[in-house]
Amino acid sequence: MVTRGDEFDDFVRGSSTRLLRTAVLLTGDRPAAEDLVQEVYERVYVRWRWIKGAPEPYARKALANLVANRWRRKGRKPEVALAAGHDRPTPDGSDDYAVRDQLLTALQELPPRQRAVIVLRYYEDLTELQTADALGCSVGTVKSQTSRGLEKLRLITEPAILEGLR
Amino acid sequence: MTELDLKDRLTASVANIDAPAELLDRARAGGSRRLRRRRFTSLATGALAVALIGGIAVTGQAILADTHPEVAAAPAAGDPYGFLLKQPTRGDLAGDQAYYDQVVAAWQGSHDKSENKSRGIFDDLRGTPQVAWAGSTPAGRAAIVVQQAYLHHHEDIQLDREGLYTLIGFVGPGTDGKPKVVADSYPAPGVGLATGFVVGDGPKALIVLDTGQQVGWSKERLYTPDGHSGRQYTPLKFTDGVSIVSLPDGVNVDSLRIRALPVTGPSGLNIHGVPGQGAESVGDNRLWSDSGSMLWAMTPGAEGLAKTAEDTLRNTLDAARDPAAYSFGFSLWTGYGKTANGSDLFIGELVLDRDLTRVYAVLKKDGKTTIVPGGVPLQESPLPVSIKLPDNQGWAVAQKDADLSYRIDGGNWSTPRKNALLIPAGRNAEVKVATSNGETTVQLH
Image 1 (tube, rainbow over the protein chains, first blue to last red):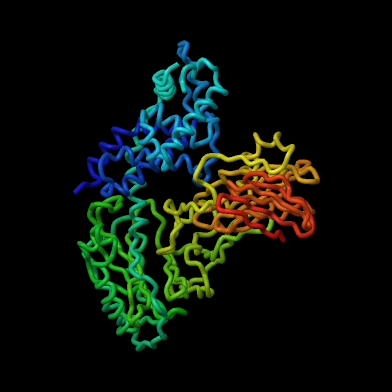
Image 2 (image 1 turned 30 degrees about the vertical axis):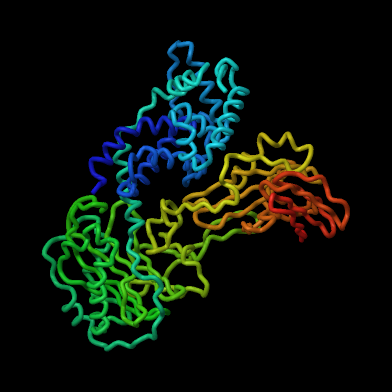
């Protein structure tokens, strides 16, 4: 029988950084992202013995739902795009820095569902079908939300950033 | 830029972020707490009240000698129920040996059905069960039974350390008139202490154990006409170690709460079996929450409000909501428009904990903001949102994906507007709601 012993610990250790990075992209807020990821793992812990197959999809789905539903815990301030707590990378002089920052900011201006689709498709590398499953919507919705999301990103970022994307 | 480039940029933008080392510990601790809340034993599914049965009076000291044997080891620190072992049975049924026997039999017979059994809390019981309190309630006889157990690390159990702890059983009247254990618990660090339980069909009574602090109870969250929400706590009076509250007919057990007074910080106390007292409290019955943010213009000439509509509505409702709500879900849809007197109008919904979602209008003019509660919407109604605005400003209505038009006093129908609409004040105002399922006309009052 699967227990919540080493296997759960290994899962958290192996997936937490990636899940946290996804959460930061989805929320633009590092503290909020940490809270969400912790909540996801708590839910995974509770459901551990009933999760069939790899736990990553379950965790990702839980995270996407938590973000999309925009539940706020007690005392949580509303999300702010790239809030003060966000760990901004130290400028390293690379040409990419400004573009990176601009892209993150632009992401937070998308509606939650569009943002989630963009992050899951282009950061998590999920297929349209996997994205639809994670978000509990149809593939058609994923397609349309992707299209709208990219279009909106185009409008609010330098055209060069998304040039060539459809 | 290709899709790969976008992925690279997204990856680079969070490349410096690493999960904190303590995340695993926090996740395990939080998961354990959730498990405990989920599995907190609920053996009763609606006990019927039985007639009060008088007891046979014997002296409390005699019972004490019989039911408070020595235990083999000192209890572990953090044993909040341990004090009950050091005092005689209390309550107006103290000394009723026949009832004691039934309570103890019920306790001993309940372990196999307890959801705490899987945690192993009954695997190493010590001493004998003791009736800490036995008394009459509006639902019949009730009792609190305690027994020591050596708790070992076990799957799903949450302990600071292994050791001797005091288990507690809350006992109410069963359908056959005999005592029935409605809940059992063990002290778990970081979790609100279960000190309250309800008994009787309805239920009829709330019983709260005296743990030496001032405690209040609240029947339900109040929503005021000015759009605020919160709870009022009535201080409990403890007698013989408990406080017994006779609950009004029709009480919603899910809405009951107890908490330490004064009201500052977390409650720290729970009523057994009442959901919504902690992290598992969230529930989403919002009207329209299956998509992202939705902005709905309700009038012409309100385009300037679109950018700030969501924040204005949210911040206004946030400032007025119950600050003690554990979780809250803001509206994902926001209607905005201009009323006849030039007020900015915003509408949306807000749900607190497991309460039903409520709709609100917010009016803003000359720096003054007014909340107009629209009550609990009827989800299946052809027009779920219909809020009458003050000062003859008309009605704010909404139905997602519907074409909405109005007419006054039998006149011509207005040009349809999607999702939400402001209807000016007037006699015999009607709204036509056109959806893919057909048209419905709703009279406004």
